[in-house]
Image (cartoon, rainbow, N blue to C red; front, side, top):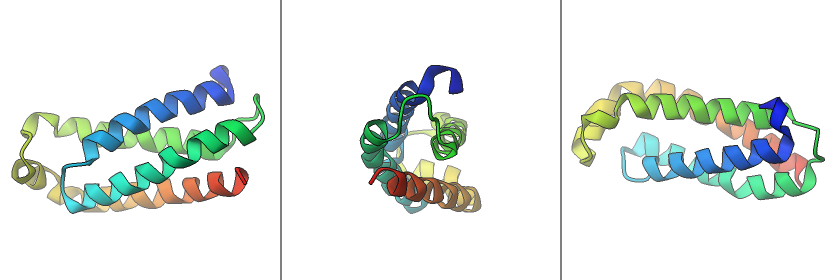
Length: 118
């Protein structure tokens, strides 16, 4: 992602986060909490684009992008399991540890981005 610069990275990350936010909206409570965390990231990204100089690509942006890709990978494993909450719940219930780790990593990076964008 370094080659496309800060603004390009933030734009790509914003699009990916929007997709993940929608996918996490109607699933289990563990993913619903992740949904809330993705919303926090989505809200800070416009400020990051405004306050972080072009050419400077903080590791927190890279970290958020990698976490978003990890979330996307986890969600893609279960897209074929059905669309009802019950089916998704059974698919996700064994991955609470993974979800908790992703949420923890995501919130650390969102906190850093919040501090940099004020």
